[in-house]
Length: 187
Image 1 (cartoon, rainbow, N blue to C red):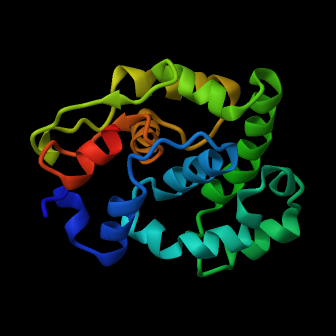
Image 2 (cartoon, rainbow, N blue to C red; image 1 turned 120 degrees about the horizontal axis):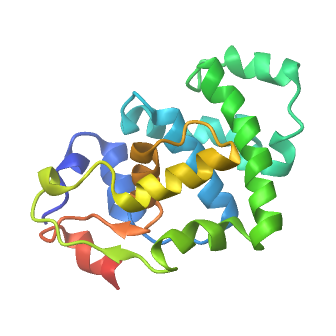
């Protein structure tokens, strides 16, 4: 069974590819989780994040933005000393900042999902890549998304991070056309 070449190096990557990657997500909490995890991944491998994902869910209150905005310095210090997550001060602090801004967007647009999916007119972009090498790391859409989120004050939200987020939450179908998931996700 053919699959995207990036998903053949580690068991967690393979499971993630086979069940999650590229499947459209409209749930605000899950969208927030992916946004935070993609930011945490900046400069690292996605496998590193996948290995730590369950612990991230635990220590970040299952990515409940209402709880995260109440984190005080004691909680931040605990996170900075937690070997189960990526202990980067800027990345950890960005979670609290982004949680507040995420809640602001929910209030303004009715949901984060409505806002974020507006960048692709509410439906996934169906790409037709022949190989993983054809897949871009950013696009005009991810540039626009990044610019809009940065304007609102979000951190760790460059265009490459936004494109990886779009891939993860199914805003784009970047499975290669020979991958068994391509048609499954395309439905």
